[in-house]
Length: 352
Image (tube, rainbow, N blue to C red; front, side):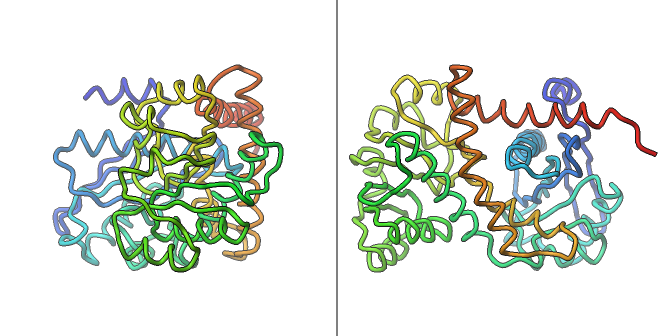
């Protein structure tokens, strides 16, 4: 892999390889952009098949965090970390404390948090070695992510139907975990009709029983006639196989990386389907975590007020897409890039 070429191509600042023989730690920290502030992004623990896969994942995720944080109006940059290990068998106090020392060595340029394969208790070990860690004092961020997704769906509805009311709208929700379940509650409380699916029968039963949803098999969710399709599970669900099946006007859900390839976003535009870019609509989680960095610590009411802004961010993305005649996924990137560039120019003034 030509690492420096890739870093130059996408504006990466720093790639740090961390090795501690005593604990067995093998980790990579990627800082993409710190124009807006220190890089914030979670630590993923995954058993990668090879080191190149780990590098590819961490740089992709770090850049995504820069865009998500910038578009959400947060004064933080984008970064990510991966620990190359099995999260089920390789966790230890020594490993996470060793990782915490590497985070501390960056002197605040990178702030870590939970991600796939890590949990609150792991952050507590890291916290013993560095203050540059979040995701400790907050409750489960899933309800906040669901709340922000609901707000984003309402903004899409306002654009397509002239009103942000979801009463009577048919919403097909894919994935009924913590985020999906709470999203269904918001939709149900507003009077939407739910069609749902999940690989877990238990999750399906809960939503059917609690919200009167209609359940379909996982492979059927793409083809159900609906107003809004809300992917809240796996990524890459908008692809060559599923696109011809879709019978919706809006795609707006909490799942990451919903487009398998960017060209699928172009196809959505030609079909007249409004797509809410995932890193815009699912930013509630990082907004919630970032609130811990405020003076005085975490304040849930303040975090939720910030998450309310996802509605207006979706409006901005749609406005840019119209102005530039581009798909919304490109408009979301442009929104983030414009903010980073603007603040970068403001910061050219030297301060003692």
